[in-house]
Each structure stands twice: as C-alpha cells, then as structure tokens.
Length: 586
Image (tube, rainbow, N blue to C red):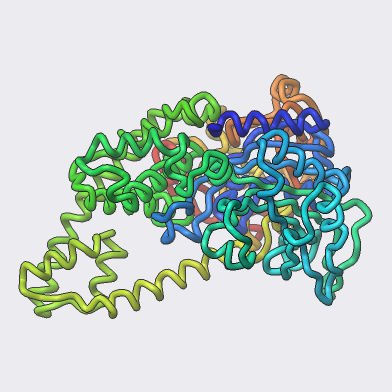
C-alpha cells in the first residue's frame, strides 16, 4: 500500500462517519508565537480544542504537514524524519471513547487488514491526578484484544497536555503492531526498545481541565484527537523495517543514486540524511520561508547545509540540491498534485536551493582558509576551534581531519564531541523552551496583538498599495512581527502614515465581529485570505467594522479600542520581495 492509498482510505473512512475534511495548514504557525513549525495534526486546531467553535463543525479529519526539529541530529537511522505527514481525526465535544476505540479497531483490522492478533495497545495507568483508564482497556477487550496485550503505562507515555500550564488534557491509548508476531511473546517495553513493537496510532482523550491550582477537573464536553504517521504506517503495512525503502522515499533515494556511484543499500545513512533534509527544505520553502540566521530560516539553512555537507560522503562535489528538490516536487507516489504550494512555488523553491547551496560551497572554501590560518598560528586545532568551524561554516568533521592529517596533526575528537554535545543540549533546551508555554497563547496581550496585525495589514495596503499581502506573522508577549509582500524599504514618511492610521482605527474603537461562511463567499465579500495555500469550505471571517475583513481562526478583541497605542519599532528585509515590520503596544 502506498501513501496516497493510505491517506485516501483514512479520510474516506472518517468522512463516512460524518467528518468534514479540512486542508493541511501551512507548516508555519499562523498565530502561534510558541513554536517555529506545525509539529502535529492537532496543532492548528488548538483554539477549537480549547472551546472555540469550528466553522466546519464538531467532526473533522485531515492529512497535516508536520515538521519537528528536536531530532534533526538523529536523522540517518531507519525511522527519524524532520518532515512527515500526520493523519488525524477530531471530535470537538461530540463522540468519545465508546466510538473512537471501536473505529480505531475497525480501521486497522478491516480497512487496513491488519491481523487483530498482531495488535498491542497501551492505556494510562493512573496516578494522583487522574484514575487508571480502565474504561479504554475494557473497550479494547470488547473488540477482541487479549488483556495480556493491553499495557498500562504512566503519564509520560500515555497522557497528553495541557498545551500550556492549564487547560484541556487527558489520557491516551496507543496502538502497536507486533512485527515479529510469529515469535514468542516478550516484555512489551523491551519489544518497543528493539523495534519489534511499532506504534502506529494514538487516540488522545481530552477529558480533564487542569486548573491554575493543579487540579484535574472532568470536562463536560471532552474532545478526541488522534494521530497516525503516514511514513511509519506505510512502512509497517509493506513489511519494511526501514521507512526509506517505501515508495514515499524511493524516488528521492533513486535520484541521489543517479548522482553518485554509491548505492543506498551499501551506505544508507548519508542517503537518508540528504533525502530527509532536502524534502523538509522543499516544504519549508513552499510555505514562504527563506534561509536566514533566525528562527525558521535558520532551521532551513541548517537542513540545506547539512545535506550539502553529507553529500561529500557520497563524493557529490557539484551543485545537486535542485535535482533532489525536483524529485520531491515530482513524486507521483505521494506529493505531486496533492500540495498545490509545491507547483505554485516550484521556481522559487529551486532558486532558493541553488542559491543557498552555492553560497554554502563558497563558505566551505572560506572555512579551508580559516583552518590553514589556525594551523599556521597554533600548530593544531583545539576541540573548541574544530567545533566552531563545524558549526559556523558547516565544515564536515571529516574534512577538518583531512586538513589536519595533511599537516601531520590529529584532532582531539573527544574534546570536539564534548563541545558538540553541549551545543545539541542547548538546541534541545531552546526547542523545548519554544514549545513549553503551550501550542497557542491566548492571553489578553496576545489577543490584542493579533487584532493589531489585521489593522496593520490593511493600513499597509492603504499606504503602499493592494499588492501588499501577508507572508507570515509572529506574536509574543512583547511585540508583533508581520511579514508582507513588498520589495522596497519603507520611508520614514510611509512608516509614520501607517502608524498614524493604525492608531486612528484603534481610537475609533470599532467593533470586531466574526461570521462563519463559505470560503468562496468570503472571497466574494472582499475578505483577505493570503496566509497559507488551502482553506476549508467554511471559514471564520473577522470584520473590523467599516475597515477590514480577513479569514482567520482568531482570537480577537471585541473592539479596537481595547488594543492601546501601537508603535512601529523596526523594519527589515524578510527575503527577496518581502519586508518585515515589528510593532509593540506603547
């Protein structure tokens, strides 16, 4: 079974059960300052999981593009991926365990034809906060799962949330495939560690609300959130222990093989890194990000440069990223025709890859000069200096060792590794910190800034022209950042006009209202809808009376006067043909 078939089966299954299919959101969170990328199918739905009505109703299903940066350094094994697709279905205060668990069993055993005897499941074992999830275990047994194949695990394994310090949360139940079912039973945790038991699906039951004083109160309208990774599931269904051997990856792998004399089966790790990193790069660029030294742009730059570094292991010494990028875009086994942003932005994607690779190859040449100067000066390189070259120039450790060997010198690899591990831990801490405040901050100040971006957007269009359109935004407790299509730096006079117009609208205290309507009607009504590439059939349209109208998920203040005075504090380039403005509430 290929990825297209799996995705079609999943969506059709839940549409038959009254779910509405919603499109994948952009990889770049629209109104979430707490994380750089969408990392799970539920991420764009947090406002609705927190209680905001969804314009499409209470039953939803989709295939969501996801990207996780925490395990970039682990990519190269058989199953870690930076970019992946997540299948998910949601109940927003509608059905619960008695429906979801039987549906899960039905989809796995009847639609995917998985032998029920090959399934293992886990449930929450209970603690002082919430009871043991015997209810889920009983429902699994009613489906025919042997009690010996139902395992109770603690909160770190079988609990989700809350997204922040408070809010909806609850136990989950996970489904595993026994890949060596013909062999005798072994301890479940050991089986997971050695790859015998592979997790294939996760049903999250948000049935509690964690309060500010740490209590877990049952919700009157609990939610269901599920997630099934496409890449892993396709591998399991086709009997592969290596995800990269599936039809999802093979067209990309084969395009790398054509560029080198190596074969994947002989030296798989560099193939996996190149395929993973450049596929992720293609999707990041398609959603409007360009390489930079900050945030999402830094992640993109890091991915492209590591792919180029790794290509040296395969003796690829000329520009090649465009070839691999083309293979991703043209991948008929999965992506071609599914994600319009790939076709729409194809030229841009390939141009960015070519430019960044060329720039990096020049950087590598400069790195060689730095190594020679350091050797001439110090007669050797410390582990710290070697790591700085590795980090700052993206210089492969193998090339550093080569240069040292030419000069009859040797790298202290343990010292280098010490500094590399320190960097990895700092990166992981930063990643966790970016995520720790929750998936979506709906505090009062964030809500004010969110409405302010709508006002800024329309004011920029009035001052600069209708060509201006949103290209991204980021909001924190301290400021808003707004990216938009415009090629020239704003003059001081333009900045003043925009700022004065913003505050004039705020002073008018115009009401802000929301209405759900068909997307086609929203466009006809003049609502702006520039963010992302796809919208559901029914959307929420926020209107600032007599001033602006935008398709958005919220949240917003009820009147502009609640925002306070806005000050534009900085502008800068956000890439080719794009500008970035920072503003804060004065």
